[in-house]
Image (cartoon, rainbow, N blue to C red; front, side, top):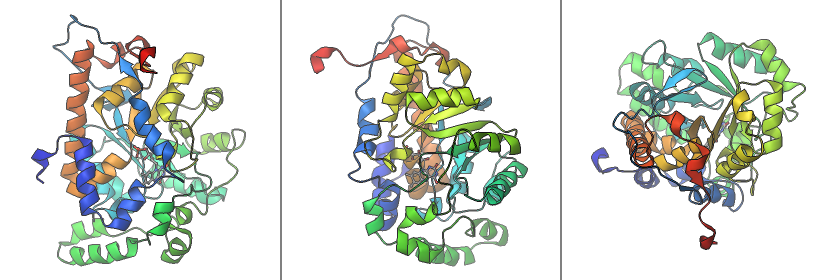
Amino acid sequence: PPLSRILSLRDIEDVARQVLSYKAFAYYSSAADDELTHQENIRAFSRFFFHPRVMRPISQCDPSTTILGFKSSIPVFVSGAALARLGHPLGEINITRGCARTGIIQMVSSNASLSYAQIAEARMHPSQPLFFQLYKHRDNKIAEQRVREVIELGYNAIFLTVDAVVAGNRERDIRAPFELEEQEREAEKADEAKSGAQAAADKPAKQGSKDGEDVNLLGTAGALVANDDLDLTWEKTIPWLRSITKLPIVIKGIQSVQDAVLAAEAGVDGILISNHGGRQLEYALPCIEVLYRLRKQRPDVFDKMEVYIDGGARRGTDVLKALCLGAKAVGMGRPFLYAQSAYGEEGVVRAVDILNREIVRGMRLLGVQNVNQLVPEMASFPPSVFY
Ligand code: FNR
């Protein structure tokens, strides 16, 4: 269907399900074990209801915010997700360009399917921010090289992923034979029809550990994280990272109030409350529930660092609920993979436009005209009569 008929992120997902190969859709959509945490990530948002305020000025409504000091047109960012080229030959670059055009920020995965340089070069203006998601290699030297590379390329923050030291058990993904090589062959054929510079930008990167054989033996995800450090610790890893970069550091994959407090004590710039889109520990709590508990038990943490969440957010109202509960912004992974798979760069632009409209409408109906007016009193569990 034409983009003009795409009204919601769910519409985009439906198209992606049709246009992606069975195997690519399995890799993108899959989650751990019986996929209950993934389903709960989505469902948990529906357990929170609004307490809208009325008769307040809302004609001037500004949904913009900052993330680590960088301006964002809406309180949404792209969470780093691997292998965008599985869905479209331009892969991650579709997201870079879509983000530039709509004013939101892309977090680039350590396991991106284009080189970090190719993605950096795709920025549409020199000040376009880019965040980098770090899987720390078990060899500190190799890990440091990766960080130095992205610093030199002008990336603006490091999101250290801590919830995936071993890969989750994603059975749908494991069952579907990996298909990147085949897709790359197709992409190369398409390259031949294109002119030089563009074709070079489309070339797959040889980085990370995506060798075809490993992948076939271990399943996609298993091979992608095979070289990771199993011993990430507060004592070692954060001081190490701090010693090699002045960039803001955000811990991605916080799943408990206790660890949120430890992160604040470690002096990092932010945390991303996340269970990796339900792809890691099955039965990890949905992210909005962890956020709710943190807000209730340790409101002081929100003054010390920025708190974000990701996992299961699909609507403007999901984003607004998270902001009411204290989140600074909300990440989305699959929706942007699907958008660029189905419609390339234009799909990413459409997805952000949809979210922008949903967020502004929601803010006006809640009686707020900027994101600072979204407060905990505006979102709660439903009246007990529902339970
Ligand atoms: C991911 N995610 C992820 N996270 C990360 O830190 N590094 C990575 O390489 C990847 N790769 C990846 C691939 C795919 C296909 C998915 C779906 C997810 C997790 C991602 O950053 C984010 O936490 C979730 O995608 C958020 O959940 P939703 O928005 O997809 O429901």
